[in-house]
Image (cartoon, rainbow, N blue to C red; front, side):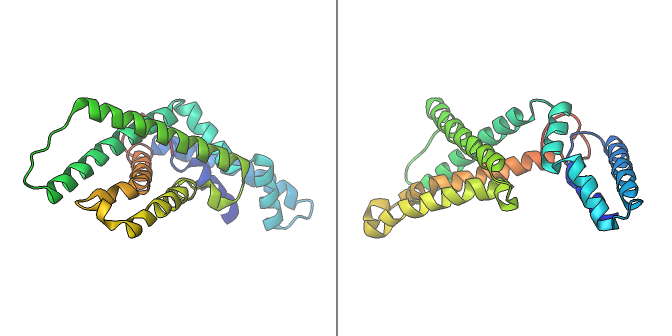
Length: 217
């Protein structure tokens, strides 16, 4: 049954386990749901109605997938968050360095450990707020488009950057030599953070190689 297959795919895809374990779980869940659907069809339900009712009784696929991932790897969100914030901090410093070298090639620039730590703490704080916002919205609203961190995190970041960039048009002289990048720091940071988040998924939850050792989504 195609509907049931799609439902199961949403649950098992990305689970931190090897391919054989994932397929075994897929078969068990599919068998259970199809058996339930056939029982309903025996009472006169159509195939589509029976599949839908079996799925409804089984539960929300996003929540089931999340619980399974927590059971396999209980600290996946912490590791994903640390991975993403570290990668974001490194990316921001690289971008800042390249911009300074490009706009001021006559100067020599170095990396101060204290500045790096301060940046990371700021990134840690802002990313934490973004994750709390995403979790709150995704739990409070069931609309599919609000289940995406790209919408919940990136859209507000774009709005904030759009508002701050208005000053660039009013006082362009204040944003010479690459200072205009500061106006888009939140948007750039949100975009890189979400890419890092997705990269974590691809690296550790793709279902191949070491997928069973760490991760989530």
